[in-house]
Every structure is written in C-alpha cells, then in structure tokens.
Image (tube, rainbow, N blue to C red):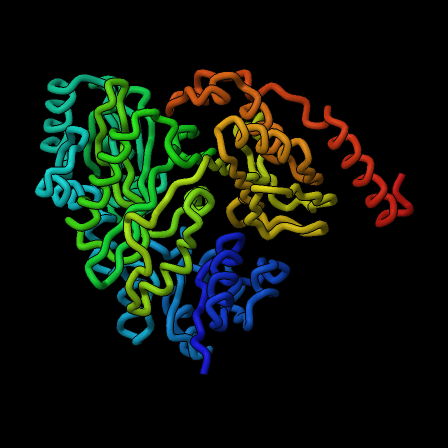
Length: 480
C-alpha cells in the first residue's frame, strides 16, 4: 500500500510539497477551507479534505488536521511554512497520534522558537552572537535592566518578542524615553501574536548584510550545509528578494559561516531541514540570529544552485532514511535570484489586493527559470490569506547572466486585475547598486526611486491591458 502524506498548508508551498510527495510515489492529501475551494493545490492532490469555513481558523486547528490525517490514512504530515509549521504543540500532537511530523521534533522547535533559550544554546557552543539580554522581568525591574543595557551598548537597540519569528515582534528603539514607552506595548503585541508576552533586547547591527545557511540533518548523525543565501533586501524585516549564494566575495569567510551554521545545528541536536541566520556587519563580523525550524520560502534558490531537492530530503529524513550524499558532494553552480510576486501595491505601502480577479495571467519561462505558484487566469484572490501569487526564481552561470534573466522574465510576465510587485522588482533589477551586488538591509530605505514606475508603460503591459478589456467586454456585454 502506498504511503500517504497530508499537506497541512495552502497556496504555492502546498503545491510544492504535493509535487515532491507524488514524485516519491506517495499519495498527497490536501486540506482546505471554504475560501480556498477554487485553489489549485486541492486539484492536483490525490485527495482533498475540507476542514471547514475558516478563514485561517481551520488551517490552524490542530485537532481537525490530525483527524483529517487519520481519516485519510496518512502516515505523515508536512506543515510547509507559516500556519502550524513551527508550532511545537502540532508536532507533539502528531507524535501522540502516531503520525510522522515532517520537520524537527517538538523539543527542538520549542527550544529554538524561544529566542532566549536559543541564544543560551548558542552561547554554550561558542557561536558568535549580537550582545543581548535574557527575558526582561515584568514591571520596573525589566525596564531598569533594559535602560542599563541601552546605556552600556548605546542606541539603537532592538526589542524582540521571545517567541517571535518571520520578522514579526520586532521594534527598533532609538532613545531611553522610547524604551520605557515601548516595552509595555511590545508585550501586549507579543501576547496577542504569540500567546507569550516575554521580550528581550539585542544591540542593533547598523545596516548589516543578512546571510543565512541552509542545513539538512538526518537521524544518523549527519549534518550538512547547502551553502549561503543573501536575504538583505527587506522591508520591515520581511524578505523581498533572496539570492544564492551570498554576494560576499571572500569565500573563506563564507565557508567559516557555513561551518558555524553546522556547529549551531549540532549544538541544538537539530533534525530535518532548517536555516541558520546571521547578520554581518561592515567589518565582516558575523552574529547568530536564529534557526528557522521549517522549509523557507526562499529554499528555491538553494535548490537551483545545488540541484538538491530540499523537500524530498525532508520527507526521506522524516521516514528515517540517511542523507544520500556527503558535504563534498554539495557543489554550488552559478547564482540564483527569487522574487515574490504578490498581489500588492508597492506604491500604497504594499496594500494587499485581495478580492480582485486575475483577468490576465501570462507567465514567463525559458532556460534557467522556475515558477512556484498557484494563480491562474480567472482566479479570484481571497482577501483572507497571504498575498503571494507566484515565486519567480532564475538561475545563471554568472551574476550578470542571472540578473539579465531576471530582467527578461519580469518584462515578459503579465498579471492583470490586481496590482502586483512585478514593476517594483523590474525597477530593482535595473538599479545600479543591485546590478553591482552592492546592497544591505538598508537598501529599500536608501533607494526610494525604485517606487517610481508606470505599471503599464511596457508593450507587454499595454497588450495585457488590451486583452483584459476584451475579456471584460465578453463577460459584461451590456456594460457601458
């Protein structure tokens, strides 16, 4: 009897997981909420189970998902990213139900999800870290410790939710007065978002590069890295563009970071796929940030330069198989860039465009091009979920070739109906600092001209708009 694996997610990552499951010869079981009943992931799965009307609440309902897995006869659950992917209670519930959780153990997720515990583990292993505090005590005692930390290390400092992640629960504090005001506010936000009001402080690394290392660890004692990614181009701590490998030219330095990432994973007794994240300052000192205990949105760039299927390896590791390759087998070839094409208006503070119909969908393609998406012509974008439509990943032998491929793909990619981030990324792809590989986490703030564009100026844009008007007239013959 074929193994059956339930995918506890939606959108492009659900499709990515389903493809890997089916390529392994297993049955893929999809789940969905009513607003997602037109989504592609439930159409390509071998079976689909409706969890309820949602929105979001059923995707986050551990009991419902475990019952669905039992009903479908699934022996394992893959959580993807977001939703329940880093929820230790979900991993523990799977364990109690005798269902394999495709990811780290509940204990690992708990330890690394708590940033203070994670810092303690890394400190004991000798991993370099940004100066920081333990959890701040409640009331005046915690504020006094915070103020003393600010006086010792200077401002700005970063106030972080202990259970935060994915760029959430982070506040930059510039002055003592702001510190005293913001700690209670940050606690309330952390409690609402993570059901944990604990917070701590870290010294701010000014305009760093954000570099992360993909790791894989099996249950047979082997931990490997798949090289670096650069995620420095961000907005409000949310990644916009991902690149592999890092654009830092000192290969010995990058090798040291990769070795440190493996050491960090081993210190945490890590299992399955994960990402060790670092900040690098202007003097090329590097500092541990966190370990993300899931497959990352940006895993595609690593797959493109290594040829290694990360999701396939996640599944094999979860079923107890050893990694089938060694560190020496991992070879980096060329460069890869991923951009997240969202239904958002970058000119309007990236306001989501939910509720709109995709009247034209004309995708790009060609040599060295990968698309991970779920949108199609006629698709109505739900207002209640993430605005990501499709991830565009390009690969080239050189950086110049890769950037040129990105430019070509963006200029040939047409989505009409909602506003999207395509023209925004076109501006970045043609901007001189990006083309030269010279950027850090200050890029978006220091390059405001990338927000100046005409969405319909290209010939492709004009053609797409014309086609959209034809379709509209066909569907609305009596409209004036």
